[in-house]
Structures are given as structure tokens and as C-alpha cells.
Image (cartoon, rainbow, N blue to C red; front, side):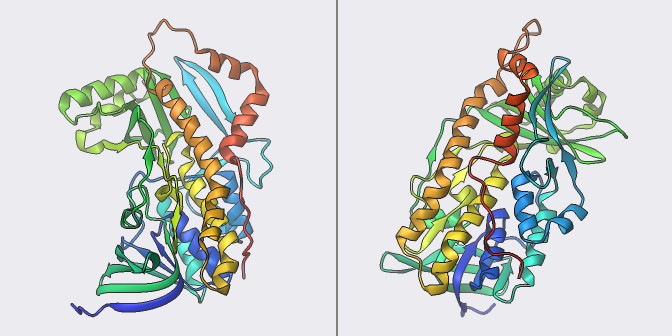
Length: 401
């Protein structure tokens, strides 16, 4: 293997080919900015990644001219969020009155969504996506970040740039190298992911509550199931699996017989973390998406907040990148625009954790909040807007070229 690094120069280098990284790279390239995206994996095929594409993100795809292609990919739609509490159904959120092109959440395996963005990016002459290339260091000029070092399939890579953007997730290597440390909220829950077969023409509520909580995402021929448990309580074993089967059967009796084929190795643990940086940037470097604010899976908002971060960053930074190097003040403007939506949603997610893992006795009546929702349609529409559009939706300024 060649020990001499491949040396590249660009306007912006993006670490991470997830939703935020690919969307930001596409938007900057369409604005005329030269971009290199470094993705550590060779493909996008990973299980149990965020795949709820909200109406606000679908609007962004329409603004990019990609919505029709998106809708041709395998997906299922959900026009309202329904909860079943001990046999009684309640609509939690209704998307029917959203001011968006589509009034439904689309569930799509994330690799399809990322492949769509990658294909669109490949059409841009100023965009390069390097797969199998992991960032392992920063290039500094004094205290200023001026590029990254990485390891690719053919050996070392050095990319010098006017700006480095960390989009490499909640365990961001770039963030760590930059010395940026997130503040973490106290966590009360973890999530167990697994798949169960779906019967033809079967329709189950999205959320089941009672003895903890369970989410069932319709994938066509199977359900992708998320079971919410108390943090730190899952220890893979035969007794733990028996207890899991019993809890899931109490929450969703329809799954009872299907659980017999579930093995310990079929259950994947997601340790939920709610954390965010107090400062998203340093001179020459910006963090967005999960690298700036890791979210709970509650509400499926993580992907969509990351997309909104990317749109805001492109809108605010593309002109500066075309002129030269963005100043620290320009990077701070991105944080000021996006910090409030992230912090507000995280506060709501933190407040939701304890009720979501609380075990209730079979004699308990329906909680007051659910009884209010059953009678208050305006509140259901308000929650639909909070989930489907968010607190500060962004709009694309670099349209299809």
C-alpha cells in the first residue's frame, strides 16, 4: 500500500455520508461550492437507522426536484400517529392539516434515502464522495482547522479545505479531535430493536403503551419493532428474552405467537443518548446533525433535524465559501439558527422518557393526557405540526441546476 498520502484541496470537506452530510454536500455543490464528502463505510446498508422522513424533509426534496424519485422508492406512509392503550386507540398526532406538499410521514430504509442523495450529488461536477474513507485527524494552522487526515481504501488521504464540517454522528471522531465535548442529559430509557413477520392486510397502531412502550413500523412484509425499556436493564440471556416476549405480548397481544421464533441475537440494543454541544464550532470547523445534538428516537426527529441543519448551513455558508473562508462569526450564525429547535425537542424528549418506560398496573385508567387528546382535535393537529414540520423549518436556496 502506498504510504504517500493522496492530497486533495477543496472549499469544504464533510466528514460523514449520513443524511446531514450528503444533503449538505449536495446543496453546496449546487450552489457552486467545491465539496468532498468522506464516508467511512463502502455502502449505506446498516440496520435500524433513522428512517422516518417527515413532511418538512419531503418538502426539501421537492425543492431539490427529487420528490418524485423519492416516492418511487420502497416506502410506507403514515398520515397520523395512533396509540393503543390497553385495547383503546387514541390518535396522538394528525398530519392532515399540515402546510406541506405531502401530509404523511414516509418510512423508508435509510440506505434508499441516502442512495438517492448520493445519485443526485454524483451529477454535480463540484461534488466528490469518497467511500471507505475514515477521518482520523485534523490538519491545523495554529488554532485554525484547515483540513482533515483520513485513511482510504488505497491508503492515507489529506484534504485541505476552507471549512471542515463534522456530520459523523453522535460518536463523532472529528468532534473529539476538535476538543468539543457534548453535554449529556440523564438517560432513563434504552430501545430494543427487532423484526417480526407481518400478516397480509394487517394494520396495527404505531404505538402501544401500558407496561412500558412499543413502536411497530409497518415495513410491508414485516414490522420493525422498537421496545422501550429502562436504561441499563437489558442483559442478553434466555431468561431476559422470555421476559421480553412476555412484556411485548402484554403490550401487543397480536405479536404473541410470532415472538416464539425471536432469538437473543435478533434483538439489537440502542443505548439512547440525549446530548448536545454548547459550542458547535471552532475556527475552520462546524458540527451539525447528531455530531452537534444526539437525539432520542422518540418522534423519529433525528434525521429531519439533521436535514434542517444541513439546509440552514448551506444557506448561510455557501456565499461565504464562494468568497473565501467562513469566519467564526459565520459559523456561529448556523448554531444560533439551529440550536433552539434542537434544544426544545431534546427538552420534550427528556420529559417524555419516564412516562414511556413507566409500567402501569392493569387496573390503571387511561392517563389524563391521552384522555384529553381523545377529545381535543386541535391538540392532535398541533402535535402533528410539531412532529411533521418542526419549530423552525428550513427551505432550500440552491435549487436544481
